[in-house]
Image (cartoon, rainbow, N blue to C red; front, side, top):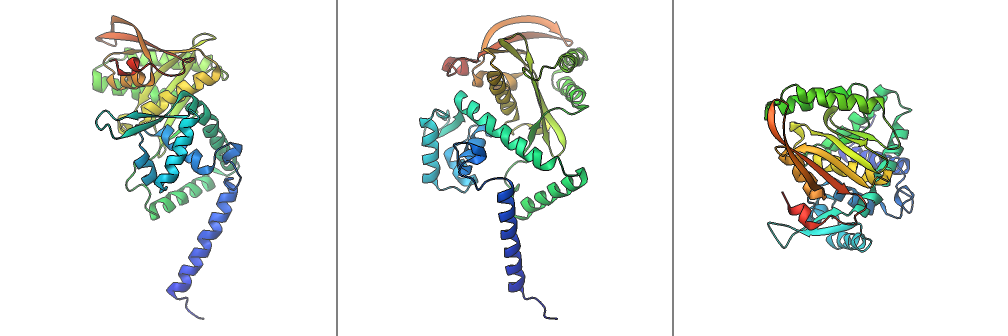
Length: 326
């Protein structure tokens, strides 16, 4: 029997990779004229995804990370700006740099793409036995590792609907986090537990949502969108685990809440927080929430300054002074 030479083995592997590429591109539907029957190409949809999921993205970073020609990317971004899907904000530290973010119209346009992608992948995975599905995902992880992914980028995460046990888990972890960092007592856990129980008991799928953030099988964050009235929704219990800081997860969870509240037809999104939760307040300010009321209170074993914030979901753009105010 002839022994295959290194060149023969390479040619065999090349053929196998090309065969897999043909199979997978057909399987996930990237061969059509528009991605998921949208007006966007696959590249345009990917750029939208990256801008939506990054904090203070820049064109230079996108071109580098997506291996795109700078001129090609520039034309895509210019097209998005013309369609009012994207805006550029000068960097506060370097006026030559611009941060990219989606406008409200951009988030509203991107939301159905994100949901359609999730639904298509779900439809592909659900018929598979859990063990087979897990083996496939492990194989995908191995491909990423072998080709160098993850060496220079933080691990990704997914947002999903809650599973049994998730609500009590995120409440427990958030209560423990606030106890460790702010010295809050068990009152917070009782309050948060009541919110979660009421959400589960009266859940309205046409008006409410809960997002659970998961990374490598571990829950790392959550947020609730809760109906207050036919026109007003509440953003409640925003939580980001200490291990997930720096991923832009808090911003992403708030953006999901805002986009979904607008899609449900709410006119206003409101929330209550405390001034010592500086990271969360920074996200609310940058997203355009307006501080409408403050009041001192003694809760969770501490003297605190409670704050009420609201976001006008019918406004086209967030007033600049609201983003700058503290």
